[in-house]
Structure formats: C-alpha cells, structure tokens
Image (cartoon, rainbow, N blue to C red):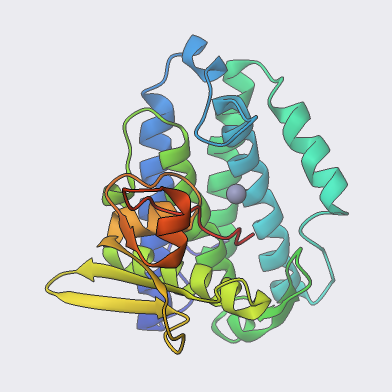
Length: 257
Ligand code: ZN
C-alpha cells in the first residue's frame, strides 16, 4: 500500500514540493479557464500553440517521473530517449483531442506527484541525469518541475503574468538564468538589478567597467531575462544606447536554455 503522505520529512523538501504542487495547480487553473477552441490559439512561445505548451508540460511530468523512478529503483530510465524524440512527442501531443490533451496534463501530474510522495527519504539523494547531461540528486527534480509549471502557465497567454509567480521561485529563476549566462560567458558587460521587497538583487557581470544595467521590479526582470517580454524594465549603458538612438531601449536578454 502506498502512503497517502510524503515519505520525506525534510522541511526544505516539503516546502519545495509545496511550491511545485502550487505551480501545478496554477497551471491547471489557467488551462481549465481555456475553452477547447482556445487551445488552438498562440502561446507566448514562438511557433507553439497552447496545445504545444500543454503537451510539453504533460510529457515533462512523465519525463521527470522517470527520473524519480530511477532514483527509487536504481534502474536507469532517462527523461527522454533524445531531444529529437522529445520534440516529436510534443508535436504529436499537440494534435491530440482536447479531452486527451487535458487528461495527459492531469494524469501525468498525478503520476509525478505519486512518485514524489512515495520516494523514501534516502532515495531523494540518489543521483540521476537530466536531458542536458547534468548529474543531479533526485531532490533537483522538484525545482525542474516547479519552474516548468509556473513559467508555462504564463506562456498559455490567458492572463497569468510573472507577478503571479511566488517570489522565491522568481529569485531562483533569476539566479539560474544569470548563472547560465555566466557559465557560457554571454553576460559580459551586463548587470541585472531586480527590486524585490525593499531590497535590490544584483546579478550578472558586476566587475565590468561600463556595464549595461537592466533593472526593474523582480517579476518584470525575470520575464525579460527568460526571453518573454521587456515591459516594465529599463536599461542604461552601451547596449541600451546601441538598441535605440536617442531613447534608451532594453536589449534582448541572452538565451539561457
Ligand atoms: Zn519547458
């Protein structure tokens, strides 16, 4: 008999699981607000309809569940056979009937949640490998899912914004994104400042002599950094001047995925 409650008692993990579950519920709410016909509409992601986003979020839960199963059993089960297989799966999923698409999301989310719930305390530290080839403990699967559900709920483009995403999730997203830039060296001369609850968070190339500084409220800055939109952020410095002759414009953020 499977337990009805989480096997882990680690307060940090339980808090992280709560954030992932809230994000899943938020995505479900935004999805359920859409009529079947509206699923055909465009998402905020170039070339993807809302169907693609929904299929991707569903298959992503299955892929992450495979990592959790791997941690539980020690039997290697990768997220996807390859990125080509993943992309093909999304294209296929986008063609499903609305009812099948909705149940793909619902069932995959429930399945992942059961895998998390039943994962024994010690197995959370077992190593698994992501599609990018990173070796991570199973605990990382919670964050992998958290950022997907919150961000893609906004991508459904039916009213959710980055301001709906909890502050700790936004902060970690910005850390991840600016960290990815740094690892690739694409953040040269770029400083990012986010205003958050009376304080200012600073990321990026803070050692540069004359940086371009992009700033704004945390949700707006994360939306810009994630490549979604630049409303609500402003920029000063060389890249801003290059982007607009008289008026400072916001340069496009470097890619992060
Ligand atoms: Zn995604």
